Image 1 (cartoon, protein in one colour):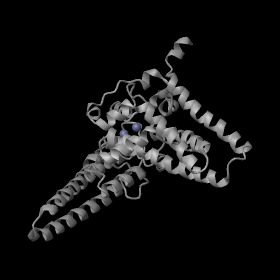
Image 2 (tube, protein in one colour):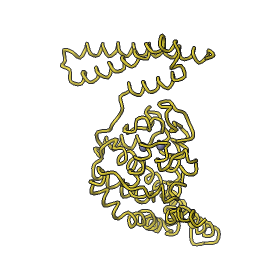
Image 3 (spheres, protein in one colour):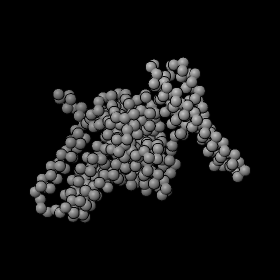
Amino acid sequence: MAKNLKTICWHVTLFLILNPVISLAVLIPYLIFSDSYTGATLAWNIFFASIFAVLTNLSITMGYHRLFAHKSYEAHPILETVLLFIGAGAFQGSALKWASDHRIHHRFEDTDKDPYSIKKGFWHAHMGWMMKNESVSLPIHAPDLEKNKLIKFQDDYYLASSVIVGYVLPTLIGAFFGNAIFGLVIGGGLRIFLTQQSTFFVNSLSHTLGKTPYSLDKTAKDSIVVAFLTHGEGYHNFHHKFQFDYRNGIRWYHWDPTKWSIQLASVTGLAKKLKTVHFSEIVKARLQVESDNFKNSQFYHEKLEPVFEKIVQSQQHFEQLKIEYKTAGAEKIASIKAEMKLAQIEFEANMKKWKVLIKALNASPH
Ligand SMILES: [Zn+2]
Ligand SMILES: [Zn+2]
């Protein structure tokens, strides 16, 4: 028992438990017994807390995750500062520590070295890992991030900044809206709890719930439900396969507010060099998953493999032509356009063939 107690990371454990408990213990009696607030002050505080919750989550998904951990785009120092400032108020550690842990998660997904491995159970991946010294105290290894003065500054003054942004700031804004207590417990404590849960779902639900369209190797999954809960991080199968892509939901209609925020930042000049994986690589991954069950069959080698090659080749050809199109002189434009159209037609025709073959194979006993 004594040995077990020593493995617990007490300051994180107590914070994770006491923050929502104390917030509710203050809020509920206050709502019932106090007559020093109005419905309007409560509504304004909930409104502010909701906006602040979204911004806090985006500072983690767009900042800590896709910018710092994966470097999937480059941000202007103004954007970096804003993301680090609001991110501190999420109480998820400094960007440096968060990104370092997250890189280990990707590198060692589902193994013992993965700090929040789902193989150790849903609870461990969700919150349990932060309550254990062993998994929460992994040494920081991110030399590229340590060179960034803004990231280093946030790491050096993390505790003070998290208290100021996480509790003091919402208390002041609450006071501005007519009630500092609402600011502290709704905009502060409960907002921290909700945004933490949203992030934690990425490590637990995203490795449990959903489909695996791009990779069957590991536990990461794609789920629209989890995408809604996590500001777009629920397309986690895609993310683990192509971690340097700034998008998680690749279709324009995929619910990925983090992707849309990065695109918006890029339009305003605050973000640049948005990284995307070639569509031919995405298609290749999808086709490999779809045909995985039939890999060793004769049918696969005789029928599917040639179509597979044609689909990938026509898409790669299209991508090559797209590059040529950008630098082509006026005399070549028309012929490149025609070739692009042909590549597209070939791609679509072979995709149709592929679907027919896969359908037939799935329908037949194998
Ligand atoms: Zn993951
Ligand atoms: Zn990631």
